[in-house]
Image (tube, rainbow, N blue to C red; front, side, top):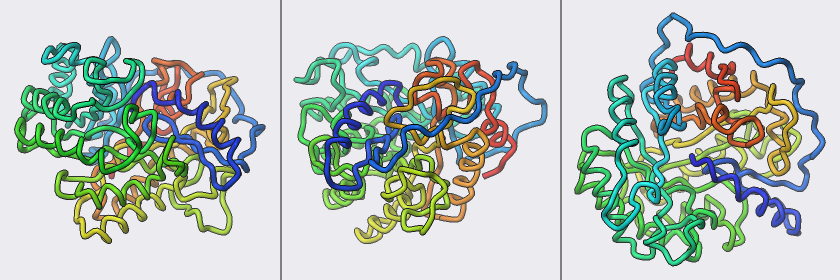
Length: 402
């Protein structure tokens, strides 16, 4: 997940407010869209705020191992080592780090590897498997302005970067997710939206990984669950996945990525249920954990693609104990308590276990809140509060098995 992904929320909110047909969800935080729904209340009170707890040392009992569960976070930079320690303390088997290609390859064929080298060494020392999600082509490779995110003009450049990356970390990085939420315009500047072109990019990236590290697992970049299907700002993720299968993605990768965010809806609920716990963001299947996974599985089965679905991002946001926060466009975070967040994550893990066609599950996110503070949507998804103290979700995850 990237720290910058929520910039699209305000734009999507304007689109949804001006539209006339329903449902019109916005896209969700970080590599997942923040839904917008005209029925969503904007004045739901936030859970009562209380003083933040004092940061305490790690509990002494050994955490329960969870080899197929992981956490995404910021494991690069000054706080990276602490994040890796916390991931190990949770007992998870995986960490996921977003690799911004544009921050590594600063000129054609010239790379800054130092911070990634350090991350890889620290994770290996603690027995953590690594998933790198790679996106954001560097400015030299694109016609668009540098500040706009998107793929390179020449897709063979992605091949070359993935070859360099996978060669350097052969045997040390277990999996690569190729791109992120390409059905959203904010992630795919420079080309018209469409899965056929995205699969061309995957073909190049996958070939680079196969040459650099044949044993690495390759995952297709997950579509964003948005509910928008205007073909300009977004393509509905189900529509997009069908386009991906028609373009031959099943022959290129080892797993299909998914971001089954649930807004404020519990993981067991379905869009078709007669009643919902949350007061909004509940009219479209894009806002339901199980609907997304079951729909993706059906789409793959229809295409005779027998690949596992990897949940490369999932989470529920809560602003409890965050104080005064502007949640315009993601009001549903006011309807999730910290206790709900913990319960929903553990239940999602249990639902995954009951479905053999689901691969590892990566939680978004571990440690963004201490880096960004309480005013950012990404922080609300965190297992840590802005002061670094552990939320109930951290504690329950640590003491839970798969």
